[in-house]
Image 1 (cartoon, rainbow, N blue to C red):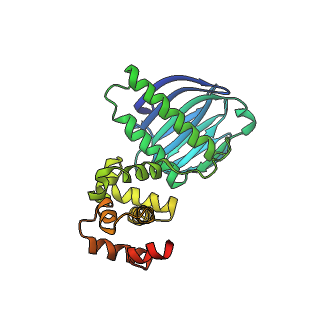
Image 2 (image 1 turned 90 degrees about the horizontal axis):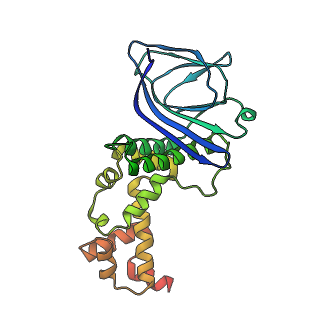
Image 3 (image 1 turned 30 degrees about the horizontal axis):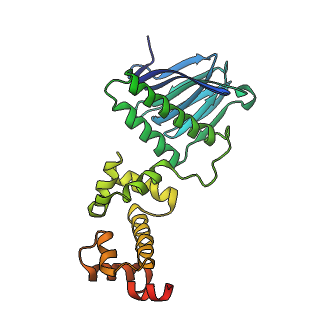
Length: 270
């Protein structure tokens, strides 16, 4: 009898130098099962727990597992899992072959909020696919699996960290702000367009950037206003470009964020 129910299962066979992705699974532990017996695999497994708590025993050592925990298990490493009370564990499983995995050894870490949000966003997209086995969808799943694997390997220090790495959800929000209709949309609507709950995105966004969604949006608008003012655009036109119907309201907003009126800022910066 299986100990879990696969919510998503995709055979991949994606090959890169030193790396082969075998499959991606999203497993929900079954209600009647509260433990997984000791077992091992001939390949690397990366386990990411999205929910649930328990104890993982790896090579005789016990490790506390909670939402956000990531386990890197090299080939032939025996491991087991025992649940604790609460929600049934939901676990993303990546099976892969990785050159040099044995020398890296076992690793268990907690994923930071921005990386966890990026993984959840990828999974949210994949679980909405009508037919993951369709040719076009298989390409999407493979691309998502590579992005997910990249996040895990860098978090586990198995790949060098990216310089000036910007989380995907920050890049997506920044791109969304540049769309013509974004000026009239509220923060909650923008978050939902990206597939996130507004409160959740706001929290992980601040964790990553130090700014809330609203603060980030204001900062981007101020920089855009300054750029247009440097180009000698009329204050009225600058306000309209940023979505302000009332020129006086735009001037007050600009002063609130810069300390000076738009015309005064242009004069000082010129």
